[in-house]
Length: 80
Image (cartoon, rainbow, N blue to C red; front, side, top):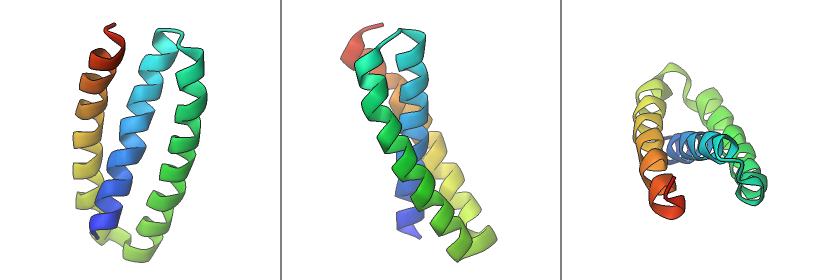
């Protein structure tokens, strides 16, 4: 189940990071972030299918930490 937590963290982290890239018109980082999002989507879907409803708390916690982390790191990296 730890894999589903980390995959949700990665997925939501990069989705939030991507939103900031688009908002600030950062084209090159947006290209690379798209591949991370695709990978996260696939891994989360596989985990959700495998674990069913038991995965919800792990996906929720991973996503919550991921979005806050992305907001913090994007600001630290790009300063916007």
